[in-house]
Length: 268
Image 1 (cartoon, rainbow, N blue to C red):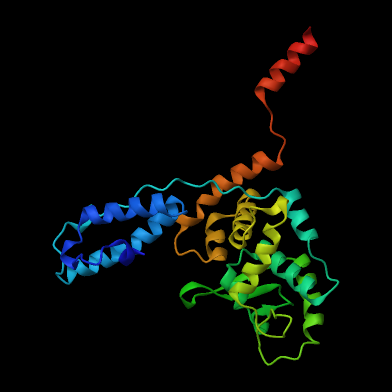
Image 2: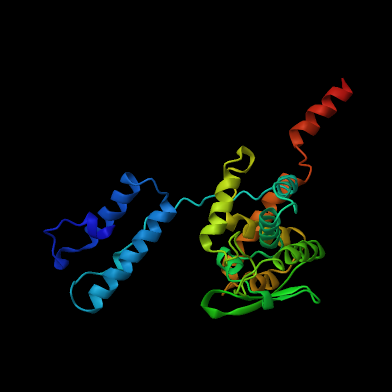
């Protein structure tokens, strides 16, 4: 995208801070993407600028390559009732429906990334002790426990899977008995999003829901960091704020004005 933005006549030496600023302005005004995505694109270009600088192709103050400020998007967690409605979408009446229900429940109960679900193998699951061995980012392994409900659901899926003739060790399979791909899960959630009540549901939201509920129920942040596979606790701390939002959604909010007006009616 940056190459297309730069004119064909522009030399490498012409790349300066103004070009960098103009590029961010261009993609923010001419592309249907939010500021967070603009920063992602610009960050890649900034790496390119740094390489050019250290290779002495350009001579600019790279410390002045500032990214535009992103609007912090509020992540609204699903309420308990919405989660229940989501789980109703799929049952165990067929192989595909059971698989889809298993994927959703696993993501909700374990906070897995999309890729971690795709890469889950049969021997990664310990049904006796109720935990998964997850191979996360950077080939880092971690142990993630799961509950009785997920254990029962995965057992039903295993019964279906036993009848599949396949040579893959992948836990989740397609209808053609092949290992699922990233696109399999993306298409699953694309179908879910078509339903009006779940227009804002996407794979990573289920990971947010897991983490938010973990904190909401009094879970320790450091334990959550390990469960999520975060390298630092800085990322994990966002869920303190999300848990507070969930309290407002699920709990009975006490309006001071309602109480005041109610008392006034009773006294009159």
